[in-house]
Image (cartoon, rainbow, N blue to C red; front, side):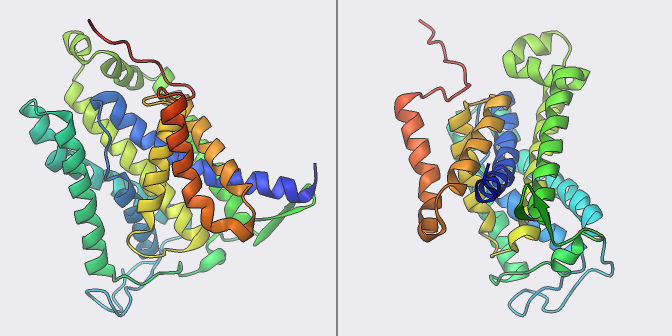
Length: 313
């Protein structure tokens, strides 16, 4: 395998890992509630900004408090973990405000789509008011990965270390979540709620707590992706997470709604497909995600690994 091809594959796998994180967040919510949380992209942005601030980043001149920064500057690894938890807590707040009231009233799921979209817009606008619209580079740049070289040579290919870290952390997060869903009692309870909420409730499973747990985990996955991407390519502005959220949605459909293996496979396929587009045509990378989404909806509406929905008669 040539070094150039290996570099393309590793770059694609790293991007695909982030898409898989976002798509898994969508999958958790869709599995337990049957709706899509459109605030996922905003939570992705929040994860990036939380990581930036926890590493000692300062608010720019266009923010609400120019020059302000936290009194601590944490190492990247600790900042990333706390940022993911912070994004998870905000996701819980979104569930309380945008989903729970409608669920209690038995409202049409379409209304939850709209309220989650509104919650996402509010979060992004709050970010813009507090941090300004300018981009931010992480305080210590590549030096945040203390002790690691800036680039690694694998099979003759020069790979940025941050890309390798991004791929490894995404893979670990996806593997840990999959094992937890398969092996733990709480994970099995979540799968039971996803299969049949009524039967799960009759079995004594607290479906409300499971829904909140799903939101917490989905927010943490988005925050993790935002922090990793921010370190890799910097924060382009409060809306930078929206494009990742939309691509995660395309990955969700590509892999199959509610399918964890489908989200992982779809993310990797999307990342690799983007990486194969030459740099001269990089402007078409965003269009690719939605071309794939359109093609899948036309040719295989249930996705690559999704189950075909049975129509009740």
